Length: 256
Image (cartoon, rainbow, N blue to C red; front, side, top):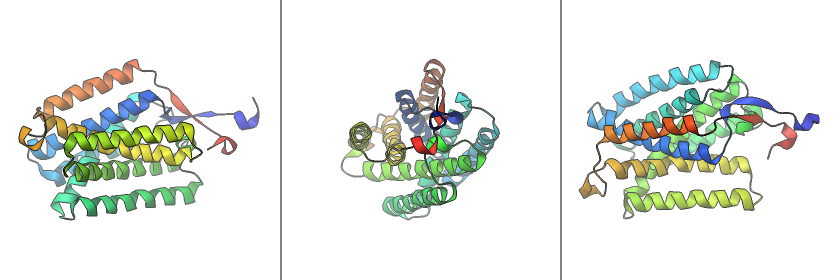
């Protein structure tokens, strides 16, 4: 093996089909679990955000301080980021009164700013370069902003004439398009990864809303706690049964 082919393990999973399946289920769970705490338990968006933010910060610290890839720890941190993203987006768009367009634009700006600062600091925003704490901090910050953006974007589209299923079809189609571009175009794989990562969140948000919203609002009126329980069981089962391996850190000469 030549020096340019040498790889080292990192603490995020390899990006496979299983990764995307679990990610979409995690974002759907984030929507139903976030709504359970803030709406079903009537704690409000601010209190819900505080609860999930504490959980996320604790898990992120453990994830960053860990010396190897732990599948359940990684996905627990992803789930925490998506639940706090749900309540933060709802607080921004509803409690602060800036609406879905304002919230989506604000959060898009934060995602872009995070990626720019990350790239200027470390020279790359590829997940293949996440092998030390500084990079992981940027990674989890960007993920949290993207989860929050995805919630606001999903609610914005679903609130229109398309409804939850129509919005889910749009975001699902966009993900298929990104997959085709990944394999059939020369567009940066790093840019396509982050675009797909962001779009899984509004897909999960609209599917989650479809499951738990009332029938007269276009949903199936499933119990939020029961829907959340079913989703977390499915996520745990997939993490356990699907191969979970750490990604590889590519050398600069092999990055694309």
